[in-house]
Image (cartoon, rainbow, N blue to C red):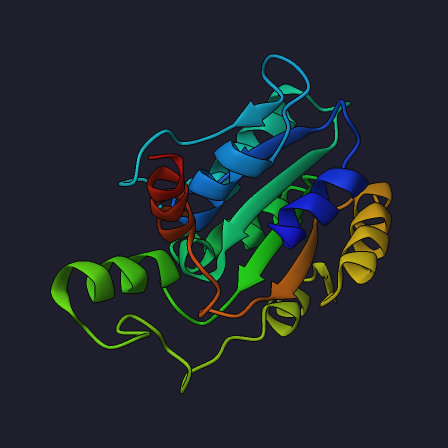
Amino acid sequence: MGVLEAVRAATPRDAIVTADAGGFRVWGLTAFDAYGPRSYVNPGSWASMGTALPAGIGAQLSNPTEAVVVLVGDGGLMMCVHELHTAVAEDIPITVVVARNEDYALISEEAGRAYDLEDGAYAWPDAPIDFVSLADSFGMTGWRARTPDEIRRALTEAIAADEPTLLEVPTDPREPQAGEWMAAADTDSE
């Protein structure tokens, strides 16, 4: 939740934020304040990984005077990575925040809980992706931030750049996933 708190603090209240399925979907609904109608676009389904970036592009094209911030995990981004090229080729000034944990962590967590699979069953630690370098290869400005202060500074700069930008935030795949957190909250309330 610390990443989302830092992103919310640095994102203008009138910005449009699009969130991907998976961890961002659940954590976003739990811990990310929306400040008005049409200001927060959430896929509403588990079956829609990879929609945050195309939704962000659509939101920016429909609202060219508004800042648009895309919240996506590395797994979700890899399902639509070509859209980074679209944003650059068409000069669409979106800011993509990618949480990099080298795992479909929500899927791995559920597989462990439901099927007793090992931690990180759907991870790819032996094939890491450097999203800052990837953004650079598309001609997109990229930053990496690890702490809440770094996230706030980099995101403020990225949004102000008024060009396609990417902010990579490395996260720990062993952090509790939203489903695990919500299940614990349900148990605590009983």
